Image (cartoon, rainbow, N blue to C red; front, side, top):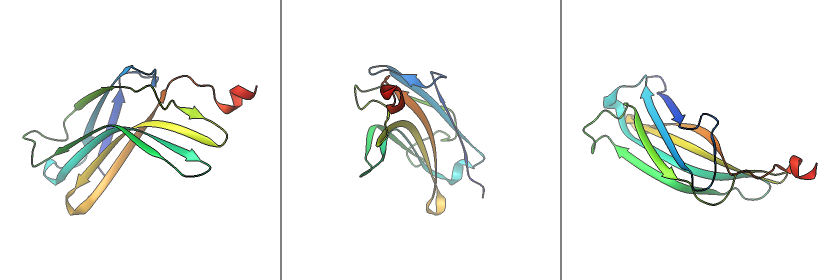
Length: 132
């Protein structure tokens, strides 16, 4: 079996949000049978990368299970959440803070597939802009 196709779309085509904005996201699954889907998780999260320990924080999480749903988990699904005040996206020289939507699909046979779509939260200057 091939990987499922996971399509993600945000309400802002530029994917730039400010704290307190409402993020609306739609996703849909294709190229997979409905019967093979065990669960789908959708989340809004941030993660750090760079020097030192990496960190991850979950702002929003929703798990939909095939056993609980009487609908096709492949169908277009919408979720939304007001975004927090922090942490803001940041592109520094020693640390970066990334925000993203993550859709994770769990299939029979303990197989899982994940698709991320990044977005910007806030308007902090990057390290290059700050030193210019």
